[in-house]
Image (cartoon, rainbow, N blue to C red; front, side, top):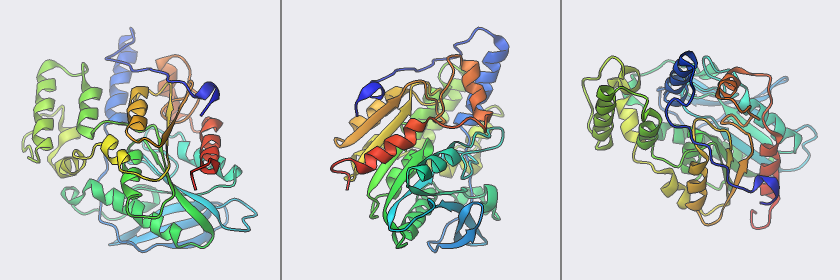
Length: 351
């Protein structure tokens, strides 16, 4: 890729980098709620159906035990012959198909789908288990594994591949959805993978990095001890009140199942075309992660978009302004993202 979007832009905040105590507290609270959230629900079956919805395109559903997962299939108007369709996978926490979660309404994934539609690319995005219209009865949290999210994505891929309206399926993973997506494409006929705002780190190391210099020494020592135990597959029965939301026993099996996956290793296994997109002003995942991800696969292409944040939106210089972006549903994403994906799909060697 060439032009002003081809360079590497490094921005990695360390600790609380602002002088205002109130804003520092806001930053620390933001990290705990935005970086570390997890949602845990039931197992998926692999049978998918579509039903029409006049305003939202088509509603896509996956029947599962005691409920269904629900998403939106958006097909450009005038769709006359088979064309590409993108499966859009959301990031961590209770994130819905539009990229929204409690306290963070930004519509990032909705804007991405709409931008792709304008360029003639269909898309399917879906509510995660227990989120939005996928609010199904929950089994015990201890039963959920990270691989269940991968199975969900594989189910959508299979359905889209069997739909004669589409010539190819590409997978787009945002944030934690990047790891889910790169695992999901394996063993399928997906033709390309796009990582947006994805980390290059194992989730345990990501937690270490995000908590570094932000916990009192006693809690930092406890957190590291818990992480070491979980990395070794050992549950921790007793967790302090302060760390309980992150490491509570109900979610430990999920964390144990996720920790072994190294995004660099998994991305390196892919033989289909790979595109890594990242924002210069991402305050959750530094650009250095994008560099490491792209370096892990010799055929990967990389784009670092100047001034773009974790949500794919043009961001202001100030940290306070970037934090506010997480609850700005009317601000569109940077059009560079969809345009680059469109160019990527048309590039030599892609098909």
